[in-house]
Amino acid sequence: RVQVGDALAGAVPNPNEKQPITDEFSLTVEQQVIGDLAVRVTGIYSKNLYTQRMQNNLRPYSVYDVPVTNPDPGPDGVRRTADDPGTFVTYYEYPAQYRGKAFQQPMLVDDPAANANYRSFEVAATKRLSNNWMMMTSYSATRIHEPIVQNTTGFGDFLGVGIAIAVPTVDPNAEINSANNTWEWQARATGAYIFPAGVQLSANFEHRSGTPYARTVSFSGGRTIPSLEVRVEPIGTRRTPAINLLHLRAEKSFSLTQAQKVSLRFNVYNALAATAAAMELG
Picture (tube, rainbow, N blue to C red):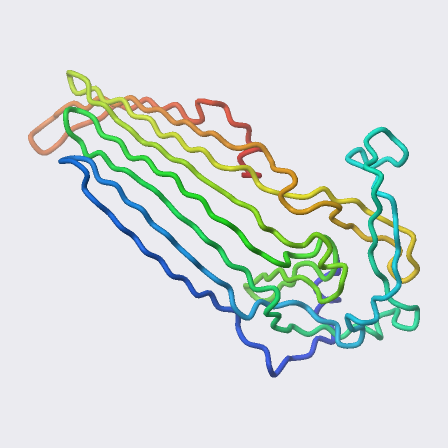
């Protein structure tokens, strides 16, 4: 990735650039089913406008017309082994006359084709405390449509004073398997039961979908772009493992005075032993 100083050096302001914004619409319907049980359904639609990409004014999109084709080595990254899919991947470089820093003049531009949108829904139920027990549960899912996500390589992350933005560049290589059209989902359940003598047991369970991703390969063979990391399959072809988290608690309260009490609590966090690596990815 290009360093911050290199990425911003020579950058020119775009007088037609608009600040990215998000429009969001939501609708919620909640209904009491029986005396202590309520159900809620929510739908949300959001759309990003004036999505930005980083354009190189001195090396335009049209000059990326020199194809570089390589065989896909498969998941093991080694050619001519059993997992080779037998397919080829092509990226594009530019002619030698456009080589060098003299042909780098980055400028942020708004690209309507890169505008993303998200469609979400949630179904939730709440059982209020009665007969010594309560429960809350929900399931939500989001359909993601991101036409062009950040490059696998390129200008990378641009940092400013107190801000960080990640944008894809304007070139055909940034558009190779760049669309994210995947689902993410989450389910939650929380419940508690009060036993005789005021002993309360509660549990909190959460299920999260894994993170979608695509296999990438570092290809070589070009002259002006000697090597390039390229996605060789659509985003979402692979996912990290789903995350299941379970926390348990036992609690007993003792009254000291009419206005004071003390509680003893015993907590078990991550009872299903979800690994730290999986939790970070999720």
